[in-house]
Length: 221
Image: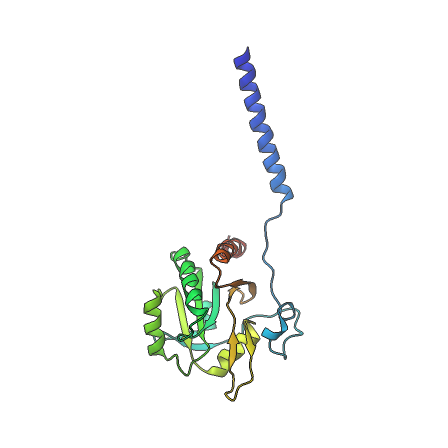
């Protein structure tokens, strides 16, 4: 009798726990990433001409050159989720840490063709194709996954401040100088910004990896 009662109690407990789990799942909506607009971002990082924009913002067309002297354009990333950042090879501060954390992302999604990486130099006058190639080899960059790009300085400046919204303008005798931030930018397959992440914080990388998976489920599943 006790054995039968114990079996009945175990079955009821399993049913109750399953019902609680299903009820909780129904009441807990899936996380959905925001779509960032210029008016949602710290104004110092956004060009004054677009600070008022509240909708329809997307990454503008671009054409740059990567570490293999290949042309990289927005079409390279068509239909892809990608993570973008800005750096320079001689940066002694945050850039080495950012590159280590970008490598974590490369390794995490190494077999996922829907996820790509894109790093822009903010000193194209220094970071030639040859320099970027040497730097990419030192960083363990997988060419098919991660482009490091150089090119026209004004275009890179405009991308940083009018598209990705991650650089502060500075007074300088040289045109188009800027202070890049530590931000990694998560961009969806429609060229919209879906998140900003501190690229110097390894703990934040866990959040970014999780958000990439959420975004992939939203866009491809």
